[in-house]
Image (cartoon, rainbow, N blue to C red):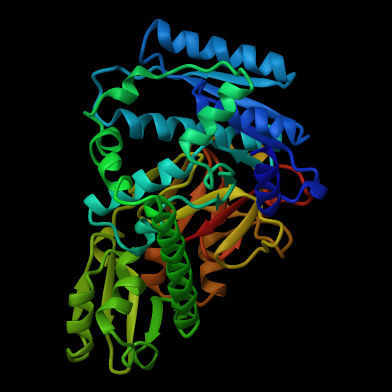
Amino acid sequence: MEQKFKQHIESLLDPTTNPKILVAVSGGVDSVVLAHLVSNCGYDFDMAHMNYKLRSVDSDLDESLVTETAKTLRVNLHKAIKPIKPNSSGIQEKARNLRYTWLEALIVKHDYDVVLTAHHADDQLETLFMRLSRGSGLEGLGGIRAKNGFLIRPLLPFFKTELVAYAKANKLKWREDISNKSTKYLRNAIRHNLMPAFLGVSPQTASNTLMSVQYLQEAFDAISAQVNTIKKAWENAPDGITIPLISIEDLQPKRFWLHHLFADYGFDAVEVEKLLDAHAGKKCVSATHELLRERDHLVLSLQSNSVDDKDEVYLVPENGIESPVKLEFSILNTDSKTTANCVLVNASKLTYPLVLRRWNKGDMFYPTGMEGKKKLSKFFKDEKMSAAAKKNQWLLCDENNVIWVIGKRLDRRYAAHDSSNILQIKII
């Protein structure tokens, strides 16, 4: 198993680059095995463990075991206590959000390149059925990705039985989470009630299903690449994004492509299709955006009725924000470059939570590529922005300063100038 793991992790993580690795360890058999495998492959790494205090003494025993494992492997351990009330709703989602927010903070603070998690083949199959039950689209049915931003899941080719066998053969210590036996959680219900019957259909069922998941991932990647190609014909304009009708009117099957092109803005493909057959001046509206029909193009913009309120302010946590502008925060991809929709900032200069707001009279910033400071009103004038475009403009700020005129210009005081503490902020 160690040789198979070594070959697989090297396909995900080039060891010649000497990556700085953080391994998330809960104390269960999966993550304990992961930590030992990474150690046996010769990688230098640290460990991270979060205690939610959900199971009283058992949670503390999990923490103690992880501490003992870190000492055995002679690695540094980061620990955090984030209590969640046992009777809270959405416990698993809350725990996941707390965990990943904390891991992202550790990456920024300690300059880790990647975080390894112990998701395995059984998790992949369970995720597929969870998302099937929720009516997920193609992206969701593609399951768990082996690489997703700073996350790497090197155990996806291995089944739980393999991990347990390895742990027993190497006399490893781990903890069993008794909550995994409860079927009140959807994943556990699928694990205990559905999976045994499904996997019992034939010896090849598990491997064939995982192959199907891989095909779905590849299909979604192909669709995403085509969507990006189509959007290259779209143009940023002062009043929004101009979408030439010629770029979308011949797409087939039409509703399929309209869904993938416009769902992120909150539009239903059926409504967009009706708009294509309407006369100029018609529009459809989502919770955040408007889509206006012009003679030979569409104009996509933020809702005009949501931009008149100067008091509209959103707090932006360390993992980004979904709405009204979807911003993704991530550790620098070495291939990334500063563009209108993607900036590289010095993470050490940011104080969270950041603020997303409209511009106010008197706002000033220090634009990259220019000397001195500039009033935003003057900057907008130089950019030849219309009144509507000014109202639609979002700013990413900290308590006192404008960090980024989103989609336009970064304040040079926050720009990353070397290879350390670089955070990528990207419009999605």
